[in-house]
Length: 613
Image (cartoon, rainbow, N blue to C red; front, side):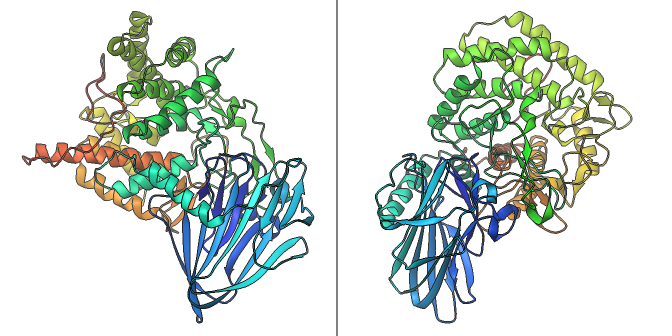
């Protein structure tokens, strides 16, 4: 992934940019080969001859470099998007000779409207320009370029020390073309930006490199103009190849953003946390009705779902969806995620905000009336609403953290009434969600279906890890939901979620198992699973939503914020649990990590203190 904090591009191992939406994450794609074929738009920059390529990110940045070796020479392609914030996002590709001579070819196929519209291209000064009703793209390069069947083709070669830049810039249709910039200068500025941002990471514990890479991904998924964080930069990458579980994730889920906020705060990024909180308040605080579960990156509320029937989909996975009807669902867990995020921000010294607490009180007021309702749940089921256990547990979290906000920070709220509601929810979950026959908490009230989300019950502080019900639930979940050690969300064949059976192991759930094992003191098991999950990342450290352990391939939208947040939290939890385990074994702990993750903190009322969160 490349990102300039306005939009993102995905670069294939073979040198082709196969996905990009201009001018922002959720705009129409101009490169859509990811969901079709080259004629749906792509930008290939690669050696003409057969070559072997290796790639990496430069340090803790989103500057990608790919080194190519041919029989005649070696070269490097440097790909990046300068985070200028000037409203004209660009992709810069610099080809640099390293040894011998390498012949190169650039093929730029622009297809606006998700691969549907092939624009004409014309020369305007030193630029080659393709125009559409909502914007234009201009290519600048010193390489000789010709247009063949609405494809801009450049052929050139490089020798040692020679650089050939290619820059593609978006501008509004009626705007004047920007003046030519300095691609090499933009490279230096982009590296400085990421070096400066990465240097602020305060986490110094185990797996720091993996944590920092995931933090950079989360930053890259942030829309600078508002502070909103998209769940992923893609749409319709399937949860199972050839299936229909294909969703548009280019929007800001309150749940994902709240989890991201906690990860950022834990690692010292208070500025980003403040920007997210401001986005949340601006977007949701003045709603005349309940806050939505998700919004567009600019705060848009209407995200109607439609299908791009002209795209064949990734490996024939149809339909390709644009927009997401889940925006209209009721998902009660989001209330808890939001209130907990506000609480954690306060605990980590983020300055107080009267507007934010006003939103918190608004959410709790709404939840007082709604927590007894059936909902669509964290997995956004498209079947019948149910009383999902995790939804109710997060409703409990909302009131628990609301009480703590008043008790610990002197804020005002109906604490006595909230305590009554909190205790009622806790008692109801223990009564209705527990299945004696299975010896487990289940996905929903009265169900015999397991769900990996119940692994979070001790993490959020609902019950202590040593509670017999928690330990039995952990055992049952491992027995029934584990596939080659990775966790399914639930049994999609029995779930009644409104969709056909078939999906991969859900990576955040696998990280939740790491957390549950760590909290239970099973540090070696937790560490072993965590390191297996690190091996699942692609060659530059990115994670998708799901994983097929049999075929060893990532599935679902990519890269996925939820997965990278879960990675960060598990690393923090392992750091804290490792020290705890060494003390328990009679060993002195090493230096305390710069921060430890504690989503749940010290619960009051019916639950007990949990080690981490």
